[in-house]
Length: 279
Image (tube, rainbow, N blue to C red; front, side, top):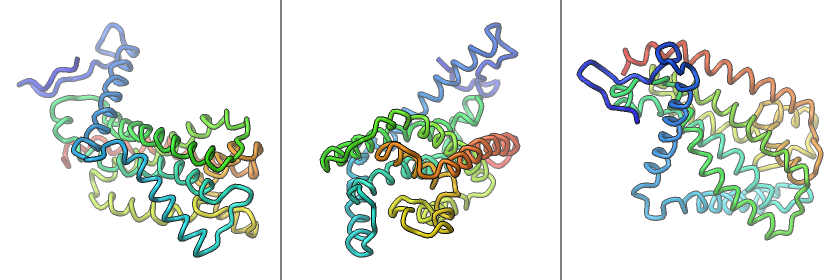
């Protein structure tokens, strides 16, 4: 168990160079800390809530109803052979995992000043734990999505078995963005508001509430050239059609995923020495 700070300063997690068991023991300790932080994040999020974890089911349901009315009833959005509400809630499930992960990670460093003063550990654990905590919400949202899929008798394709690969790629991309916004938010506290605004705009540049099919090639490319657009489209393809409609753009997205993750880790490490000074 990790001990609190002493009079000599913060308690340090053993590093690979300072402990006989080296790198593996340190990694195990860091993973255990990450798991505990993720659990604490979920508990804190719903601790004094009347409905608690039920909000993870209520929120996607309400959003699906609202957006279905706006885009299907008012704007007559097309969704191909898939019922629009199933099309919509599927896109929202994948998008919310990304958006909620990024937003919760934004304040992961600034909101843990007390913990940082008591214990030394790789600070990158904090935004990582925040993103992993959103897997709980994602799991409940998948249950809701599954209920709509079976309720509307939508046929799932066996290629959906490969869906975890794309979800993993999406999580890696989310982590890359999370590291950037978490680190920048320490030195620029407007980052949280800016990130929220950018996410509000970003969702309209992804095929979440409307299909990319049926539009011009230029518009389809604009919707799918960003990693989240291509990933969400490909995730739907695996679930419902069994083939990728834009495989080239998916490979472009994978390249972006790797680039953003590496850039996120690099930027976080560059700004990490400033954390103690600013906080």
